[in-house]
Amino acid sequence: MRNGLKVFLTQKLFGAQITALVDAGVNGRIDRELPSLVASRVDQELQARITASSLSFEEVGFRKLTGNPSRVLPVATQERMFEICYWLWKTNPLAQFIIDIIVAFVVEGGMPFTSDNPEVKALFTEFWENSANQLDIFFEKHVTELGVFGELCLPAFVLANTGKVRLGYIDPADIESVVTDPHNAKITIGVNLKSMDNDPARKLAVIIGDEEIEILSPKGRALYETFTDGQCFYWKINTLTNEPRGCSDLFVVADHLDGYEQFMADTMEKFSQYNAFYYDVKVEGADNEELQKKADLYRPPKSGGAFIHNEKVTSEAVSPKQNASDADTGARLLRNHILGPKGIPEHWIGGGGNVNRATASEMDLPVLKMLGRRQQTVKHILEQIADFVIVSALNARYLRIKPEEATYEIQTPEISSKEIAPSATAVQSLSISLTAAQANGWIDQPTARKMFAFACDFVGFKYDPETQDIPDPGYQDYGKGKTGPDLNSEAKRGPM
Image 1 (cartoon, helix red, strand yellow):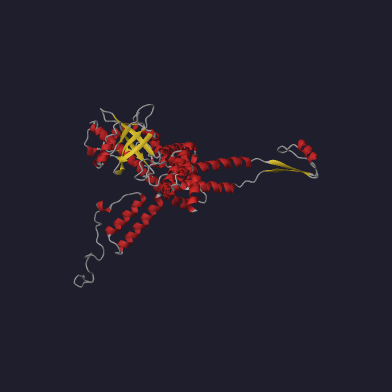
Image 2: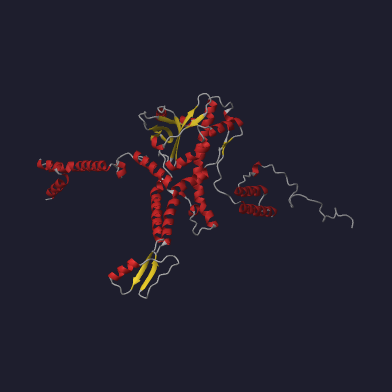
């Protein structure tokens, strides 16, 4: 009976394939071949549905459990992310604010390179302000693009005679794939570009330092040598170590940004309706015919006019009730859900609420920490570019100094604005306390110096007491050695 039911069900589900087995009278083959038959039929059905819907296998949301796991977004998903996040940045005010506020804090106005060597300084100035680079304009845009797309690719060109560096730009959507060392995912070695306008695809070698080249695996070194169509810088954000492609700052909140914009548009449309009103005219004891006559003759009163009627007719202006508090609560909920992952407090975008100065100062800490982390990334980008500019000029003998003399510093804007007054008051109080502690013998002078140096750090001054040449105070503490004659001694007492 159970075998008959099994045959019946499988015939209904899989049709002719099972029927052929049953006709052959081989029920045992059904048990053996059913699993593979089911798997094959499911794969065929799934592929047919994907093809009909014009979606990729990854977009449907299925993957083989036994397949090799990958940390790379599918190409279609990566390109879709670029389109969505760029569209949000162009059309969504809140999305643009998230990107722009980060750039405003982490990018220094003007050239960020400084050097005590005049030749190095002149080299940086020429590189930064050159008409081909125009980094005084484009660097801020590049940092913006890093946030919008999650990655930044700048091809580098070195002039043969002078070693001067010129930078270009590659749209992330034109990148086919990013290649890392097969045995060390920390090192990115190449960028594969898509073919465009019937031109063959290009392979750009990522500019890496000499030490990184030395630690490339043999397979990675052989792979690195195949990227022969030029060189480029490549940086990424919002990724783990084993993710070769970057991810936009807006990707994680893209759906919520779109929902917030729709919510605001719907609220705006509703509020325009709330401003409308109508007249409610009540006529007592009138039938439909009389009501129609009243409606034809009725004229709403103009501003300052009068409406003359008897006791049977009343007219009242009526407007819809609006629940503005509900809209405000919903908008605030969505907005904080979007700004929260970025650490941005609501008072930064005009939603002060019940925030006062004290609580606002505490709420600023998470976003300042996150901004500081992004500033470190931007500083790393500048360091890589600066090192390459110096090395290229040294190799071309355009910069005629010793390599160890080519020193520089990178200026970054101050993320937080410190209030000096409270810190200065604390330093003053501590110095008085340290003086009293020394006088009472509770601490020695070296310890007091270290504590005072620790307090100075809060006002932004780095003070190292170990490197200070502090002169002797010129006196001895009481109780340490003789400080004068012993007046109680009879031998030393003079005549009375």
